Image (tube, rainbow, N blue to C red):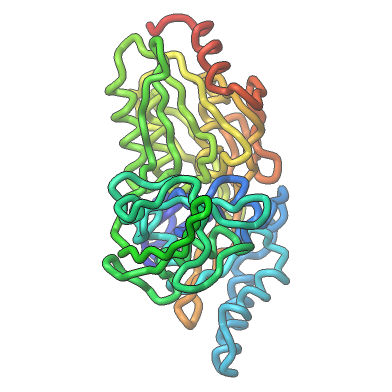
Length: 397
C-alpha cells in the first residue's frame, strides 16, 4: 500500500487505512488516461459493474477483507493464482463495486491518478463491429511522430490481434502493462487506412494526462473541461477560474469525467464556493464530512454539464454545486457511483478494494445506483443550450 489517500482522509483515520473511491473507469488502462469513452467503460470487463444502493455498505467489510485475504493466502500455498481466488471471494461477498487488482495494475492505477502514464499517445475506441479505431492522437506524442491519424484502424499490437478485445485490454497492450514496459521500449502496431495496411514501430514515452482544458465558447463564455480528477486538477480548475475575465460566464464540463481523487474534486468545488459543505460520507457507519475552502468565486454565472459518463468524484462535485444553488446542471442523468472502497494489500502484493460506505450530497441525496438528475435535461446541442442558460442568469456581480 502506497499510503497515499485517494479519498479525502479525515484525521481520525490511522496511517495505512487509506480510503479511495475506486471508480472502475479510472484504471490506468481506462478513462483517466483518455484511453476510452464512457460507453466503452460500461462494456469493459473490469468495469461492467452496476452499483445498487446499499448493496454492500451494510456488510461487515472487515470480515470480507479477512475472507478475501484468506482465499488469496490459501491459493498461494496451493500454487494457484491468488488474484483469481480473491476475485472469487469478492464475487461471493455480493460487493458489486469490490475489485481485485494485481500489484502491477494497482501501481498503474495510482500512476494514472498522479496525472502521468507510459504510452504512445493515442486514444482507442471500439466500433460496433468490434474493430478498434484510433479516436485521437496526442500532439507531440510518439504516435503523432509516426504519422498515425485519427480514424486509422488498429489491427494488432506486437503481433496480437485486437479486434473484439475490450478497449482496456488494447490500451494495456499499448502500454506494455504485462511486461512492465518503460518509456523508450518499442511496440509494433499493425495499422490500416483505407486500402493501405502497414506495420509501424514506435517507442513508448512518459506522457502527462490533460485533465483540465480551457477554451472560449464565443461571446463572454469560457468552458473549463475536467476530464478526470487526477493529481493537481483541482488547483488547475481554480487557476482557470481566476484566469477568466471578470465578466466571463463559466461552463464547467464534467461530461465523461469518470472520477479520480476526491481531494481534487473538493479543491475544484472551492473554486466556486465560499467554504461550506461539499459532501458527507460514512465509513462503516461513522459519519464524516468534506468542506470547501473559503474564498471561491460565488458571483459568476455557472453551468455544469453532465452525462452518463459523469461518475463518482465528478458526481460529488456536481451534487455540491447543484444542492447549494451555485450552478445550473445541464445534460443527462449521471452514472451513479457513490460508494466508498477501502484498499487492503493481499499476501502476494495484489490489492483488494471492498465497499465500506457511501457518500451523500449536501442535502442528503444518495448517488449510488441512482445518479443525479440535471436541472435541464438535454441530449443534443448541450453546449448551445448551456449558452442560452448562461444568458438568462444575468451578469456577473
